[in-house]
Image (cartoon, rainbow, N blue to C red):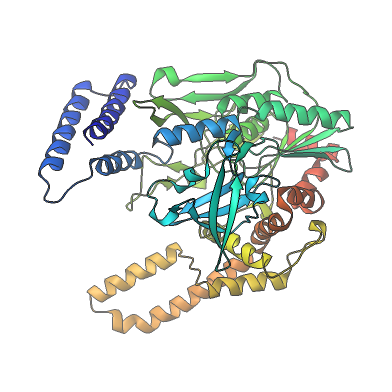
Length: 545
């Protein structure tokens, strides 16, 4: 216990000292003073508190609370977190071959990869793992997902719940290779279609291989799909852009109060193809490295961006080694596109009265110019050259995603319907009405700013004894708001249907089936083909100021 206490204390000390060593605005004496205050407090608290304390948990809370006041990307990583980051970047690990989500006392299978251990063992999206070997997930205080990892060919017994019933299975772990480019194909009009899912160490090499293969088969234009790509390695974002732009081209600039983090990043190799017409697809889940690629392609007028405004993560993180194999992943700078745009959408340093990060308002966006003189804007992700309703995420759609309502409905749908061909699937208006009925049955709540303001009004009225007088008007407003929410749901039908379609098709045909569906039915791909096949329209978009 003493060793653990000292090691955790060392983490905090190193954390503070690391900050002190690299920032010009820090006062070393003030940092040393605060460290001394903290260590004295920590010692007195653990030695004198009325009940028994857990120093490790107290320290963990102290570190997390301190970092939570900065931004959501500055994190303390224990040894397991460090290893997980290494795996994400390498694209290889040993495990069960599935995307999982740990929620309180259970692990949810989000997506099993076709042909990998979880799939072979019969696990499906929506299954709840409740026991791994002899360990009940509910009793495991750390990340239970770590229990699924292990040596290649090792076996683990699993108890899971599906549709309210418990089942048993045994999983044999394997070495898993996570591809950056899980799918590419040549479309009927000689358009090459490439999906780039993540920016790990293989992102550029796999994209180059896909491009060369497609060109050998007759591709004369390219769609690069970055929708849902959360980002990854900055170096790979540069390398992927370098596929289409020449050597020596500025791709991104990072700026910080720390001078050594002020850098310019240029392409280092000859391009693979400077001339092939290019469309990049993005949406609200395209972030970070995806925005570097799409933003630079747009700024350099190298291709047309289609979809919906991207996520807006313009902050750069770097891991700093601490003691005992731990790390501090710390935000060190902001990145800027070639035109000078910073696309960070949330301001974590100027928060509102509820301590929430503020969002840059559209009226405050600043204008910049692309290479050809087109106007583009900063302040909130990459705005596509062509925006499509099916790509956007309204407030209610975002709430549905956060509540896992779309995921859960797809699970329920799967066990009630049969589907033999992904290309024949269509999410009908009747299905959408069924989805709305499902939301009501599940008591889905969408709390708007209006809801919150109205609730505060009633609380104030109670304090002033006006609540009885205004109750009828209050109820009338609630009814009107509920009606407006229902209308908002209908207004967002296109984007919700698109997300439900994706989730449902994956249940039956895995991602491979979803990609086959995309190339025949996806509106973003259809629009991209339309633009690429109309040379005048393509050139007009890229050259009209």
